[in-house]
Amino acid sequence: MKSILIIGMGKFGKILGSKLLELGNEVMIVDKDEDTINELAPMYTNSYIGNCTNEGVLRSLGVNHFDICFVAIGDDFQSSLEITSLLKELGAPYVISKAERDIQAKFLLRNGADEIVYPERDVAIKLATRCNAHNIFDFIELTSDVAIFEIAVPKKWVKHTIAELNIRKRFMLNVLAIKKGSAINAMPEPTYEFCPEDHIVVLGAPNDVIKISGKN
Picture 1 (tube, one colour):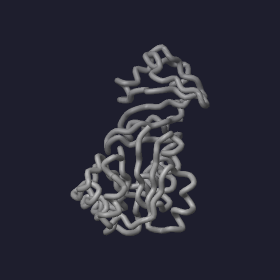
Picture 2 (cartoon, rainbow, N blue to C red):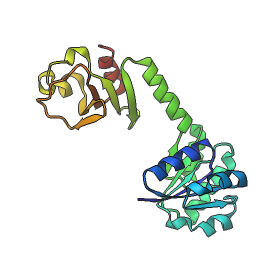
Picture 3 (cartoon, rainbow, N blue to C red):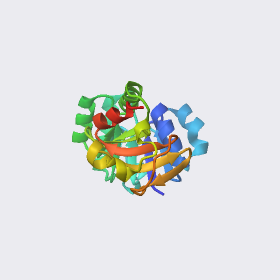
């Protein structure tokens, strides 16, 4: 369990907070809009109405005691920048700030953000990748060159084992898991034989994954 502070309870902040609660974390929320906090307060351990560009407000929250502080403000970049900077000055150990553009990310990082998230951009990239390729169900981008993909098993792989296909050498991919409905076989043995209904979770370069996912 982690102690989390979320500043800014717009759409992104609400979804983030809800999921973090679901995962068993202690979450405190802050927003300058009274109606927003009054609506959400019953769900959270702590909530606060205040303008976090005011150093006194942030100081009163004890930001240095939180494991992670999220700056989830999307409609006022100046405020996001000021709050990010103040959080680090007041000893917040790890600050994650929301950005919409690369230029915003650059300034946020210079002013103390430890990590930047681009919610809208990330969703758009995922959607474009899924729609552009056949049989890709999900993916997590690790770097611009490497990602983890969930794909349907290529038809030519069915009834063959991982070792037989020599997937790592021939296709430059690592098989991390096999999914059958809700069941997951993590780190399958080289002797595993693929079935028609399998989904496979692979690590590799996007172009290599797209190449094999189109062979169904």
